[in-house]
Length: 243
Image (cartoon, rainbow, N blue to C red; front, side, top):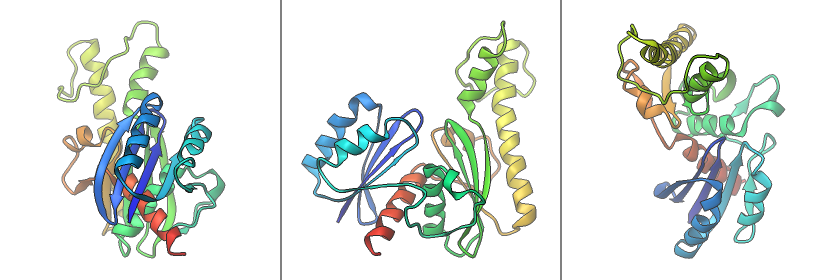
């Protein structure tokens, strides 16, 4: 059985095809290329189930197109998931975070897990060994921090991320790179350390668009898994198929 996973984030759309548990194909595109890519996937794969996770205004457009081919599970806060949700305001929980916790529930069912998603925003989500989602934190992502420096000041430029720089910047650009990149690394390491004080046997997963860059700067013991969110959506789709 083939499963089509569509994750429409703030900036890009990720499209993944699974055959049972095997990842067959992954595409990363903008909305302008979405229709062409999905049409080609339905032509080349016999798709049995589809799930759409969308955090933006394009949800209705993507959903309408996908339903031309197949019935679609549109992920929402009311969709059955493979964990117990202890969030104080479950109706406000983002579907991307729901998918990440679902992946943690599938891959680490008896573990305390901290999932860090380094995308447009940085999200931190904690699932305990009893398969309960406890909550987490949200902070600005890497590029958002660069944009904030440029938009909220008169003299600082908008820079592209540079990772291999000294801690002490010798000019303004280097100082900005150090402040943004090292500041984010220190934030992540601090959040991990504080969470480990509550859960000594903590498993830490890093995912998202900036995960590969950040993983090189972070301490050992953090597992970088680029397809973690897609695997979570896959887990939700299977969970709903078997209900």
